[in-house]
Image 1 (cartoon, rainbow, N blue to C red):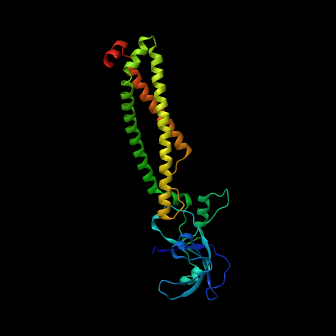
Image 2: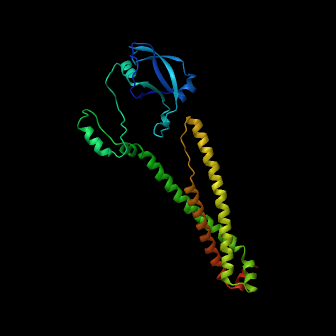
Image 3: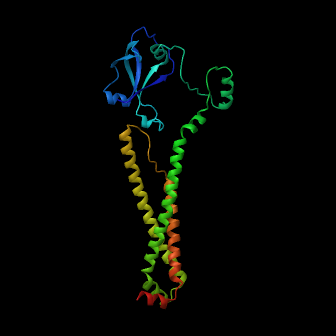
Length: 274
């Protein structure tokens, strides 16, 4: 079974350890894995079994999902601070604590003032800790960005080749339009508009596939890790960027292919078509 991670609950007035049962709150995943529920009684002990006390489950909690700890698959149990300290035999001792500042208080100034009185502790701002712990995710994000750039370049080349082949197959049609008096400009605009329609349809299909894939990824990994984390996020900003990029690339490829075709004389087009 996965390791059990003990988390502190804010210190509240509770009975001493020598009295009655302890009251604990367990994580939902632990409750599901062990079949525990509210009202069940557990036997808790210190690592060396020096102290053993009964504890009753008074609540089942759902901790905020944390990407930094999702792979550890640890279970969390929350104690009243006084109970946990007495159970471990280390009263008035903690490993870490979080302070919530009032709105408008400068975190760096608060850390400086607390540092003058809190001997033996190292003070860190939440933003600094978040930046440090998210370094791995930043590296992964940059890696994904590099893959995305390569994918866009490859797809742009593929799209250009596809549009060139498509327009080349229209040589006879373009020649006929030129023979009946349609100007180069009109033919060029028509071909570009056709490329825009193809790009728009392709963009809609691509967004639909992305939405289905994103939902499948979230469903699979949420079930695997029993979490509420979002592993794949498809935002409206991403959809707009993808649609705009697809339209621009489609128009660019279509314009280049159309210009390559309409600049040739009609007889040349008709002769090559035949």
